Image 1: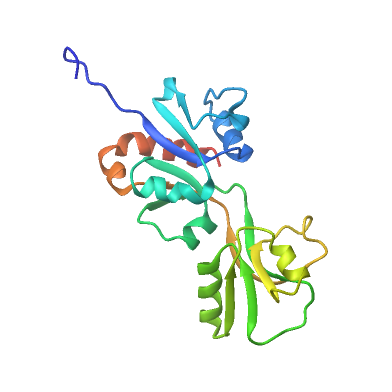
Image 2 (image 1 turned 30 degrees about the vertical axis):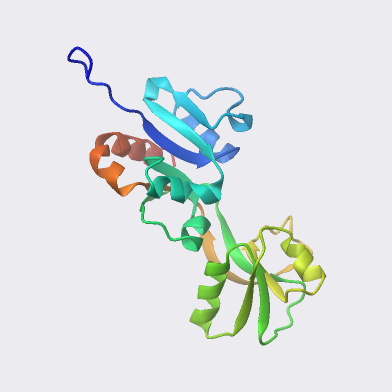
Length: 206
């Protein structure tokens, strides 16, 4: 407080860097974003008139930033929340960047004692445990199709895009995903009014 004036700290929101669906949503809601927002090299972009700071981050890191209070709130794909459970509030399904995680293979031939390559090992492990199927889960950070082509894996578990993967078979759909609004538990209590305002804006913007 300076001379009787309260300084209100800005809300910090972590969002996936370069995600045009997210920037389009905020522009639709009237947020003044820089022209180069989607390609910005900055890590923090302030929006002064909203008393808000965007943290531009890798999607996988966003739940961690929110859990530890680096960000008060965040926008992240459901797949990352499923893969890496974090102690955060999941407030809202934004209904954008809709897709699904699937089991994908070169052929529809069924095999036992599967070798499965994926960037989501926890999702994959839970899936096969629930089905009572024995599977060896291999975590790969990328190049999943190579694992199929070389025979290292019998199938992969990944985001399925029919256009990009039209030469492969979607063997099984595990779950639907989309972008979600999440909040730090402490921030949700002490900055509730500000977070609720953003929540309402995003709800109406769907």
